[in-house]
Amino acid sequence: MFSLDQFISEKVIKRPVSMFAEDIKNNSEQITGKVKDKSVLVIGGAGSIGSSFIKALLPFKPKSLVVVDTNENALAELTRDLRSTKGMYVPDDYVPYPMDFSSPVFEKMFRDRGGFDIVGNFSAHKHVRSEKDIYSVEALIQNNVLHAKKLLDLLSEYPPEEYFCVSTDKAANPVNIMGASKRIMEDVIFSYSDRFPVKTARFANVAFSNGSLPAGFIARIQKLQPLSAPLDVRRFFVSPEESGQICLLSCVLGNNREIFYPKLEEAQMMTFDAIGTELLKAYGYEVLQCDSDEEAIDHAEELKKGSRKYPVHYSVSNTSGEKAFEEFVTEEEKTDLNRFSSLGVITDKIIPDKTRIEKLFAELKEVFDQDKASKEDVVRIMHEYLPNFEHIETGKSLDSKM
Image (cartoon, rainbow, N blue to C red; front, side):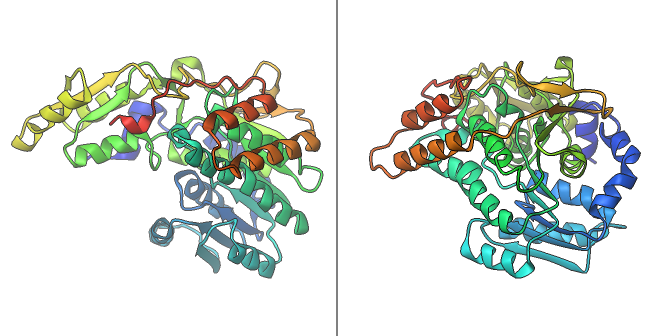
């Protein structure tokens, strides 16, 4: 019987246990002191990383847990999962809310609760494909940046003991709007660090996370549809369990304005085609390499007749915003590599210039208020704020491919 967790462990991350298990164990007493009997709010908690964060946090017994997510079905599944897991601690005051964290009803709930001790924000547009045009770009920036500021303003009235907002490895020397938006998000949250402690984490792709290409492989296999993947894009990967653990460690053990990241070596990167091939082998198939999406779709008809040769189209990446490989730290950033066995920590981040951030927000708002704004206008404004933002534009979106 196929086990996805076992496959991730053996074929993707190639670790028998979580790389963060030792740091969790060594710091369990301190984590307990930070979490036990505290009120916790998790925004975007039904997603892959948010739900993994919740599962990493609950063993330390918070007093209450409120989970907010716009995906009502995913919230229901999260609750069923937690309630069905042997030994899982779920506080009596556990409430999942299907709502938008930028909505008036969220603000009502938040104020009625009088704020929270720990707040984790996992609501984010995470896909590079979200920059296809000005409308998708505006939605991405609203969620990743502008609404994040609205939340921070609300938190300022009820300062939490800890605030965590997830970032991405794509924020280091970004080449796509999503990565640049998360890099700006880091500045936005750090600009509030004089009001309450703020932390974040940059980490690798979460293997088989919701909406990811590897998760898409499983969906395609279930439907006997061909696989498509880039063969020249290398990425770091962590397991779903590890994604929640790094966020927990950053949230409760990080100092103000620190960025956590996993200590992974370049040799540990994988390509998506390699994952696809290993997955097909695990399902008992032999790879049939095709020269185009169309050819692969044609050959997929043979699968319905019992063929064990699975059509794939592995090709060189040619879509906008795709970097050949990712990185966690820029040359200008100072790191502490001795505090944890599995984690590096970016330290000494200064409080960003709030005037520059306000100017950026005003310029973005002006663009979004126009009838004829363009994606290029947004890229120009973001580049002026982030000089190291070198956008890769090919004129081709991932939505044009399988």
